Length: 249
Ligand code: 13P
Image (cartoon, rainbow, N blue to C red):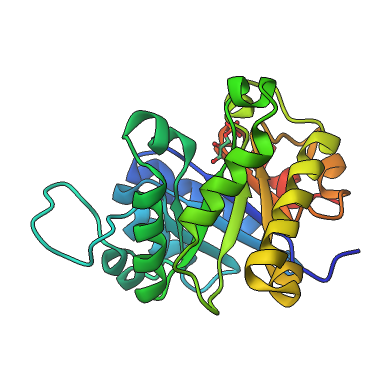
């Protein structure tokens, strides 16, 4: 059994108005208030963050932004800064989610700048990586993931961060990587962490799996030695599915 405290995180993506988010946050807080042996983090849309912060500030649930700009402030119309997030009480921020890479042109360099800025603003980056189906079929998974990590985390020193391995072909498709497939990549990532940061960091960094995590596959995934938690999309939007995932065995 790993000494790393597991994390269950819910990425709400572009779902839930502020009104819906408040109601959900209240229910989630009441339902899982006795869960203390794992970390729970939610990533609401920006517009819902203030109300979620109001409801969760003194709870066992932490919250963060789904994205942020790489600069601290300035003329960037429509953007949200790391300081805006930390001022609301956010502790974490997602960086490099595949939907942002695919639809908004985020590349490894952008991700690297965001990681640095997040750390400078006191946020813990949850860095997302993962291969497409084409890359997996071409047996490039290990190279792709290590490349994303080596550029994305190039500025990190002795600072806390979290990794989420999210194979693109498993996101929102109902196709989960098998626990064996996921564990293989998590092991590669931990080996890479050992080479890049040393054995102590490799032992402590949490590596989450994301991609069609559901109540019926969470236990099998969490039984793997290098899977330290889950980044949940669709199943994180309903308490009926998120609560059993949070309470994985
Ligand atoms: P799904 O759980 O809906 O596949 O989404 C995963 C994800 O992208 C979490 O960030």
